[in-house]
Length: 114
Length: 119
Image (cartoon, rainbow over all chains, first blue to last red):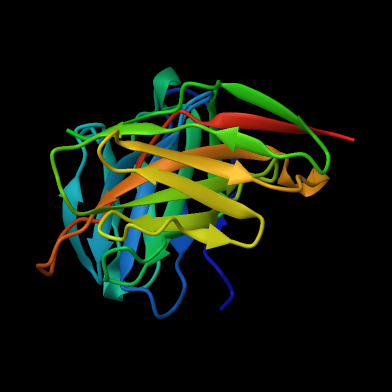
């Protein structure tokens, strides 16, 4: 169990640029979640995958956001035409598809928009 | 929609003392899970303790225990014999429990309580 890994840890970009984050879940976990955490707040749900299928997206996920999980392994979260309000910590978590199973979180990717 | 409220933005405790963090939640469901997660300054969220709503017995994990009051929708965390390493942001979280496959077990978090441990 090597844990959930996220890359990069930090991303600084100019407004209007596109960014992509990667998440590698724990290998046997078929559920993968993305959350966004802003300063002073708890994480908020963005979207989740079961294997390669994206099953739900939050209203927080505007059409500038897209997430994929090809082959049901790693996942990417892309933000197009970044805006100041996108500055946040983006957290990835994975779990087994069993209710009550704890989600295991990565270190997150901190996005700063200049 | 489910909501989770942590009314204490910050708490402090002396090393070796006991501290209780509060959490209340709102849901119309009867079966669900509640969690306490710890987020140290390194930012990785770590599970502290988990409680299933249908279990009357309060969960305990070493120095960590909960006081689960289902009727009051209250779920507090007690940390005994506090240690310097307990200093972190603590989040209370809710997840639905469905008997059917394919459900979204997403977590709904509170805003967190920042715990400081004084030597």
